[in-house]
Length: 296
Length: 195
Image 1: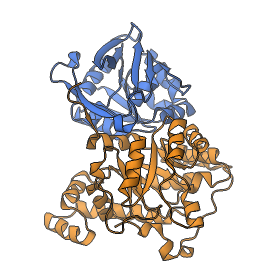
Image 2 (image 1 turned 90 degrees about the vertical axis):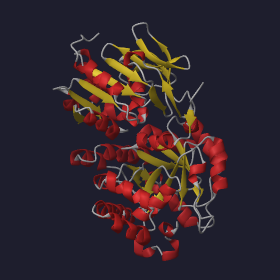
Image 3 (image 1 turned 120 degrees about the horizontal axis):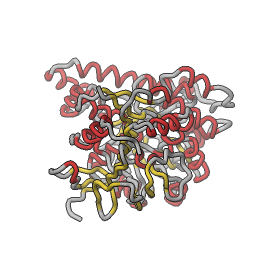
Image 4 (image 1 turned 180 degrees about the vertical axis):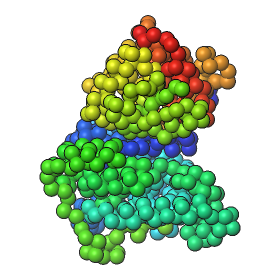
């Protein structure tokens, strides 16, 4: 067959477009993956431990055992994502060889490289990366990330950090839209953002790739809040399977994400969900334990 | 003036709305049965068919679409949208509209690394060929003889039509070529009787 192209930027970015308006859920077993699919998740993130357990158990958090990821790939028909350590391109090669649909170069795992992120352009498989401000988002896109998510503070069940990051990115996009060429040059210095991408943001009025929210989502109202603030979709990490009734909560978060502008639906789906994950108040998370500070 | 809806439960809704805006067509997002009234056409976007299917059943949006199709509503389904239109999805009980007598197999082209773009001739549109973007696309394995095949790739139909319903296994909304949408909008606004 002539003229067939794979691994193009359009295909990488395009898969993220197909996930918009949806919920991506962390799962650690094929059974959990099936519950997520049943609830209406658009994709699952295959992990060894959810962020809350990474936080509680400590130690070095690495890519999951490929055997677990493979079992999850077989269990569901929706796309499967997997996490690798910051800068650990060999872990990414493993997941790519396995046929994973999307790779998350994630601060939830222990960073492998303290200076460089993965050169994501060299992979045919698309990448999603975390960001807590516009400069960080645009550096990741410059390295080849085809999708961005806020970092929030993973495994806390506390939405405050995700909100801070979403708000900041929106403020910075508004500033870019009102900036002259000379002002953009100053922003490249202040934010560490590539000039070409700042120009693209100015033209589009948004990030040039899909932007999901992540980190601390625990309730349907959390999901609705982030969607109303302009996010394209939601990642739920520990929030589903650390709650008392995962299927009911997962379904409720999916419906709240779809009908985020309808308070009546939000009311309906918020009733009788059982206990949400317990969660952490931010002042109890010491600075060195904050995963959002990982990433350069 | 012709009014086209885009089913907005999940997926690449914005990209379809952008194409309709370029064409100067009045467009509306559809999330509830009431939104289907007064439309000449409805686009089922790309996305996850299992997710959209489940959400579509919840507020009986599916019933409103099926009823409107009987009255002559034109429908274009791209990728996940085509899966939702199919009456036979191999190995799956997932919710669907079942408006096209075709058998589709999900993820038959493989995983994301097997997603591809290529050029495809679409005779009803004339030259040049269409740039077709296939992302975890469904494979159309069989079509009933009441279905017209408008384009093929690798021996399989990739653009099909039955009356005012169009199914497309790739994503015309991800390119700047608006011809498939144009074809759909004129089909939807035509006086052709529903089958």
